Length: 310
Image (cartoon, rainbow, N blue to C red; front, side, top):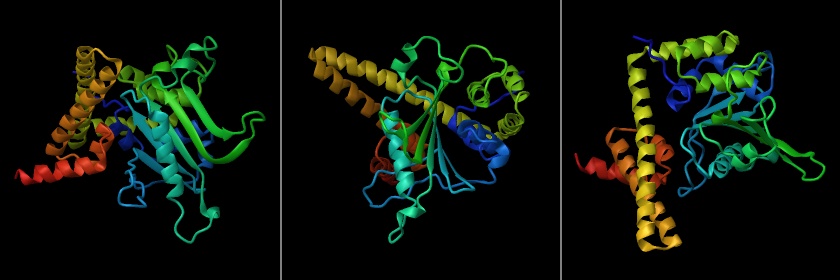
């Protein structure tokens, strides 16, 4: 029987890998284009973002890291296609940025905030169709800053966005490829042969692979991983069914607007169904919010309703 290995792109597995300091430094160095030895320190922070008011939207990050120079990094993995991903990542990073300052403090306390999005879908579809075959990392990796439109100088370096689109990875492992491509391939890998080949190319990925092997053989972690993988699979299937139901409703109404409303209604119903299931399984509220995209208040109400049943 083949050795069981978790998929690093399942967020549970990725979070566990990022608990390894060497793997964490190697990944950040690759994405931020730094030398690993220049990253003096990394610290895992609480992934819940501070709420200024009771009715603020809750922000829950996958992995939040503090670097030695005060830079904060938010690393997010998203497997299901989400058209509003750019808005979502901006919201999270802006919330992380403003959360640094306390009442009475000056703006000088604000440090750089970096968002790293690892996506298992194509976010920039138009860019994928323009300019022919991309060179180097240009196909799957994008980096954004706040620049002046004409002269292209930086307005501020305090916010930075990195996006890795896994479906755009080139076919086959190239000789002399960048460290960021090696990491993207490692995150996207599923077979032992792939992991073995990639891990040989970079010692930091080698450390990540050792961590992956260890957590894959841990019984409790495997159960948590499989529950998370099943929740993602159920959600994707449910969203597809909901969309098909919505289209059917729209066709019956015979109006374009009805079709849109039907799809929206079907998705909401399916999200609530999945949320109820996850509540019953004892999932934390913040995880359910991230999986279903429902408001935190709705999840809390489902938790109360569930408690009343016992």
